[in-house]
Image 1 (spheres, rainbow, N blue to C red):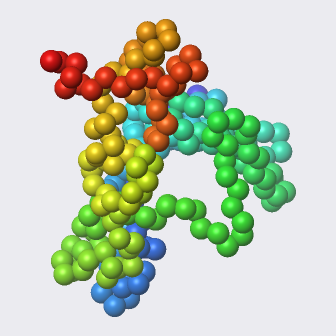
Image 2: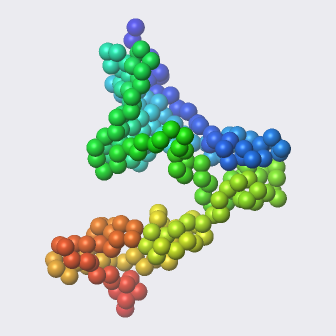
Image 3: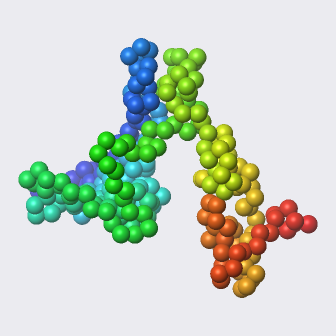
Length: 222
């Protein structure tokens, strides 16, 4: 029977689970377990099944994905948490009920947790308390629903500061501003942005074994 072209892909919209966040007051106030944001997920045929998390665009390589293959005696599941990167690990389901997790060697291998451990940060909420939690109870704050204070430690200055949308990955706004502009290698003369020259968080760019020099963007325009 030929495969119906319309069945080769399935677009879903998945709500965010807040059950663990709202657990403290769920019974008392009737807080919802699921709500905004609703995130797109694409299930697509790809010599097996490819599940792309966070988009309905099959060619979007900026999103993580899971590849599922059928094997003679079970299923092989390839985990790609880093968009466009190599697999961090593999999960195997055998038809007899056994299952296995195999970390991959590479820059981002899957981390194995001990029994009873919780995945770090999976249920942390950055920024304002989600509307889904407080939509019927605007008087609630972060402490009321058991959330940690909305602060974060900067990887560069190692100071704990209030977290906001102005942060650049692991850098606070002040440290992020100080990495802007060109960085120049004093040995070979190569220049480029902080990331282009190999800067990463707290580490300054290092080219030819020599620390690169920062050119302040304000001085460069004078």
